[in-house]
Image (cartoon, rainbow, N blue to C red; front, side):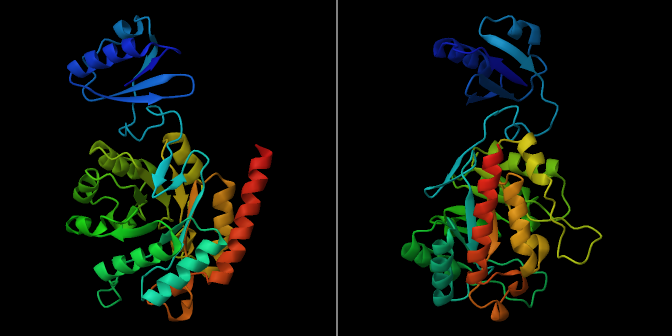
Amino acid sequence: MITILKPNTPIEQRDQLVAWLKEQGLEVDISEGKEYTVLGLVGDTKAIDVDMLEMLDIVEKVRRVSEPFKKANRKFHPDDTVIDCGGVKIGGGHFAVIAGPCSVESEEQIIEVARRVKAAGATMLRGGAFKPRTSPYSFQGMRADGIELLLKAKEVTGLPIVTEIMNESHIPLFEDVDVIQVGARNMQNFELLKALGKTDKPILLKRGLANTLEELLMSAEYIMAGGNENVILCERGIRTFETYTRNTLDISAVPALHAMSHLPVVVDPSHATGKRDMVPPMAAAAAACGADGLMIEVHNDPAHALSDGAQSLTPDQFDEMMKTVRTVRQAVKGNE
């Protein structure tokens, strides 16, 4: 249920109403919009008399929310959420580009890539320290040593770092990581999501390869219900009958998620397509349809990458892609 307060409602009266609602056993989220203040009520609202609420002088209207996700719902929070990721903002008009190799392989590799992507305009550095792989015989990542190398690259370039977590027990290793990524395979690892809800780190939550948008938002709800509302949604392609690409990029997910939720939405065309030559046009499409950012795999030597070399751009290709993305974003802004 949401309660929309009238413009210019005195804070004292608002707080009195909030206190009463809490006495009824409800959790109250306060969202200060440009014109209205919205009180999002979470809990058993069946006993709340809607007519009585609407009779209050400070209440504009009351609505029941049918969707199972509440905190992630745009009805609870009409304005876009802006998340600070180590000094880099994303959402609400702030566009972020997260770039780097699929796997951290060496100090030389990660620092070279970090320097190149920053020079091209990337605002955050990605790199896999823990790598979920389909085959148990594939490279599994450098683990804690990989995080240390990412931190060295951050020290050299100043780029905030993004890396994937695999297990709740690994959370202490991520103390200095700026954004914790939850991969597609872990999107419904609810115990991990609940544990991340107790942290204050921004969480980049990837859509599962066979999950609906509502299921993605329900996973975000797990994190937010724990107290951590810094969630970034990531569309990275879903599994369909098509085999030409690694996955099928659901570009319609971007405007759909923006309609459903206030959370920032980024697109990962690297995992979506699995093909290096398809990444730039899909990145341009994501920018054109209003994505809040991109996640791009870049490797200084893709032919010898330990994982996902076929979908990784070279630094020079990333330079060109960024020029295209900037042009597209400028064109879209010009038409607004």
